[in-house]
Length: 250
Image 1 (cartoon, rainbow, N blue to C red):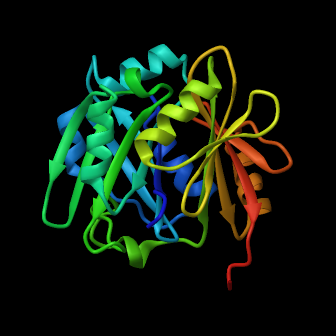
Image 2: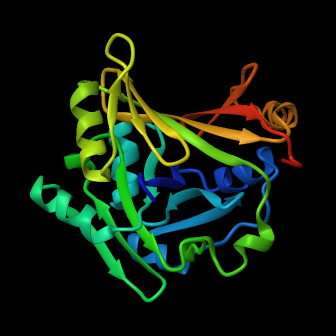
C-alpha cells in the first residue's frame, strides 16, 4: 500500500432517523449497529458500499464528542474520515512527532487504530487503521461482505481557512502527497481516491463523493424524503453527497 486508502466516511447527526434515511436513499444493505460506540455515548449504523463503508453516528447522551462537534459545526455532519494503512506504527510516529494528539487507540488481533484529535488535524476526526488481513474490516460487523451494496467511496471535500496548511498536515500524517491545483485548492492523493481542500470560513468536511449504480434512483428517493437535492447530489446531515454513475456489473 503506497498511499493510505479511504475505507470509511462517517456522518454525525442529532436525528436518529438519518440512519435509516442514509440506508434508504442509497439502497444500502442491512446496517451494523456497533456496540462499541456506546462508550462514546452514541448509536450508529454502518453500511457496506463495495468493500468500503458509510456510517451515521447519533448521540444518545448529553455532552458527547459528536454532540459538541455538531454544535461547533452548526450542523455540518462530516464527522470522521477513516483511512487504512499497512504501517500504523509509522503513522503514529509521524503524528506524535507533529504533536498531534491521539485521542483513542486500540490494538486487537485483527485491527489496530488511532483517532487523531480534530482540534489538531482540523475539520474532522482522522482515524488511521491497520486491518489484518488487509481485506477485513471489524467495524463493518461480521456480515458486511454479504450485506454489501455496489458502489465506491471516491473521496471527500474539505473547506479550510488555510487550505495549504491543512492539506500538508493531513498528507504529512497519512504519508502521502498534497498538491496545489488551481488558486488555493489542494488535493491529497490516496491509493484509490482523493481529498480536495478548498478555501472556506471554517475547517469542515462538507462533501462526500460516491460512485453508485443508480444515481437517478437515489435522487428520486432523496426527493421523496424531502431532502435537498440537485442533478447529481443530495444533502443529508449537513453533508452534500455527490453521485457518479458506475456500471454495477463492472
